Image (cartoon, rainbow, N blue to C red; front, side, top):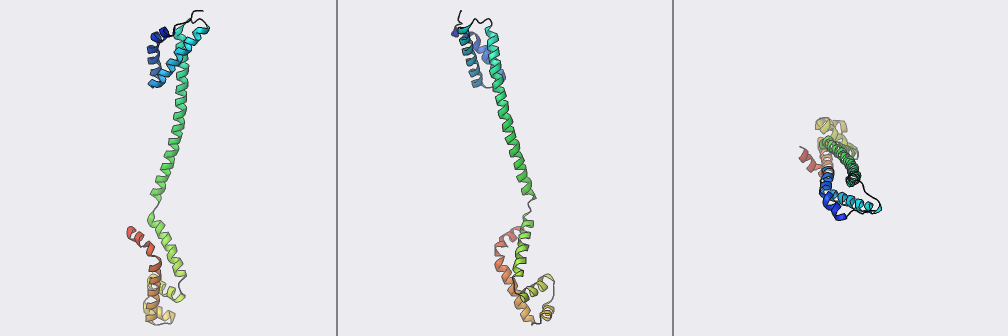
Length: 180
């Protein structure tokens, strides 16, 4: 059984096999690895049996290894693309959520709830005087008559309500200035 000389295989076929492989894998290092493996495989095969067509064995081996490499690359690309698509969808959701977020509306709801809670916890006359003055637009005289107290008493209750609201809503002042 005549064995093929490794150096003669290498010098005769390496460059042509490398360029062929590179045309498919588009990576110098991968092409070098595949061709080197193919030449070693051919040389070891020649120790076991007669080789009738060196080119056929080289091309078959290179084709098989290149296909495996490209299929692996394709699988990696598919996984990467799925991750990119998922990331893109998440990014689009975050963008649309943030665009839909109206700080004025959110703050206004929170502020409204806070004012409602503060008003509910005020003494009854103070709450009544404030609501009739600020929300219903009644005069101090009309409110005084409804409550059966003096106009000065109405003014006291309104200023007390304003002080309670101002003291408890001071944290909202920067937001109110920002939104105005």
